[in-house]
Length: 382
Image 1 (cartoon, rainbow, N blue to C red):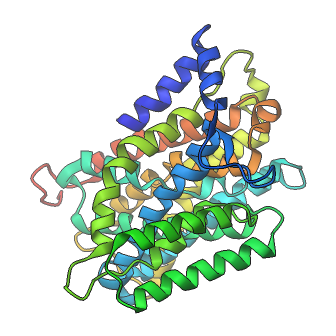
Image 2: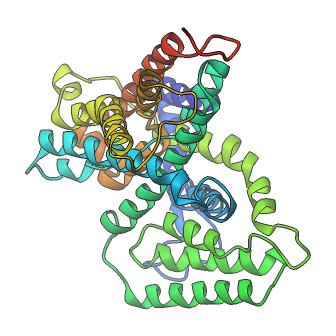
Image 3: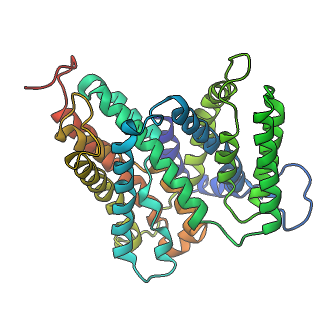
């Protein structure tokens, strides 16, 4: 609700005379943190940069912590538990990307947005499932959570491979040395958080200037954090707990507010029904559900995976629809693909398509899941 509220607030600000000027001033306000070493290192940037490139690195750091924990002792530990979500996640990436590419093939820079509809927003997807309560079997909730984690892993790889700039081998080398130092701390059994935090911030700075998107630094740093210390305490779980509230209640709402501001003034049907916004909307709403369900169906029928306990095909399709909620990650990739040029290129219709596609997926998925789900007491319908 907070994320939706911030996105809605951004729409109000951008489309209200007077408030729109404040919104524009806010996201372009220059903040200088630390010392500006030279023009190329860019430590004096606007608020939009600090939120998208610095604060969101903490979000990706928390995602990395969750991934490592799940791989060590959670849903990703055993191959038998993750085969179906892996197939589903692959289908949920390939199909939306194909739909977008078919509508925008050969167009530059349109085709750069092919990865926008491939993302699933964990927070929203799990939130909708929570609203359904016991109408959806617990096994399907675990399936969606695991799928969303795998989806995030796909997004991280896509960002690293396809949305990086010109590489600086000097800064890549320096970043590699910092990663080795972080691994060394882990192997040496260092249980203090401070050295990890300092080196992770330095790693962010080097990755930022290497040409690879700075968010990748958060994931890489997270994988070097020890799960358990010698005294059996868990630094990883401590950091995950510390970051939970700031990420969920400050960073993501700020991200939603600064990235969901779409001006509806002068927006015409030709903009809304352009190939890019339609590729995003259809990718999220149709591509995600078709890809996830189709690949899951193939995996189950071929014996690679098994239907989640006490679930049926209709319920599986319902959660596939819900996974069309892209929101946070889709907005993030949209910013990487088009940047500030999206307003002049698409008049904000690309971001509007993300909001509408995510909203429709959530609403349709919720009501479909409610219709085909269990009884309110959790017992399967006859």
